Length: 286
Ligand code: CAA
Image (cartoon, rainbow, N blue to C red; front, side, top):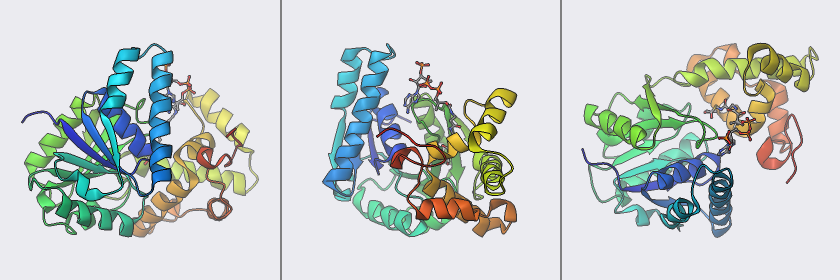
């Protein structure tokens, strides 16, 4: 199969902007859809800042940075995805929103063999696949935050996904210099099935007063050589995203282990979402 040269990314939040950046740096033309001019501008700024940082750190020449930037275009209209060979949706972790996006993309993308991938971390891929008329070409492609740094991509075929789609998606991950692993379409796949109970346990530890956030994080950073402790990591992921993932996993398994603790829910209700809102378990400069 020929490499992908025209990618669509729907949603330019933390994950979408990272995916778009990595693809543009890999020489791919990337069209990004965002709902409003303000969110598109915020997404563009996030990518530009990240490219500038990579250039400053000597990971990217100024020429390559400018070329990557020139490969990015923005739209508010999903019908502009008509000529794309591969589209990844990275909108909010909400089943109804993702289903709507997949349904609209299915109509918008002209080539019936083009692949529609979802960056969900916990919603059944098959539910999204059957909302389209191309269930054989719908697949999960789950990236990790920060996308430019983490090398892993989970590839999740639904029961309906064709073997050719799986192979093209694995090849595409390679084109982005990512390492794919494959997992069954079960909420949480491999990484979140292991990671989320650990993160929620750390929240319960804070909730019960067993230890303070900084002591818990230092425990895992200095004792187990994790690059960041669980509460710092929750702040990076976003507490609202973590809550949504935990809810989907609880919905699937009914295991108390996956139930979002009350403290997490209250922090989300208060708007303490982590780095992106300036406050979570820690506070951050704007
Ligand atoms: N974009 C691009 N590059 C970044 C970056 C970003 N947002 N953040 C950090 N980096 C790069 C830096 O440029 C730096 O690169 P060099 O060493 O080559 O110069 C390198 O990463 C290290 O960065 P820093 O020195 O600034 O900071 P650090 O050493 O503390 O690393 C970190 C920051 C990469 C985030 C590291 O702490 C880490 O890997 N943390 C764990 C992250 C993790 O577990 N992610 C998975 C989350 S789960 C998920 O995403 C799935 C889900 O569904 C919830």
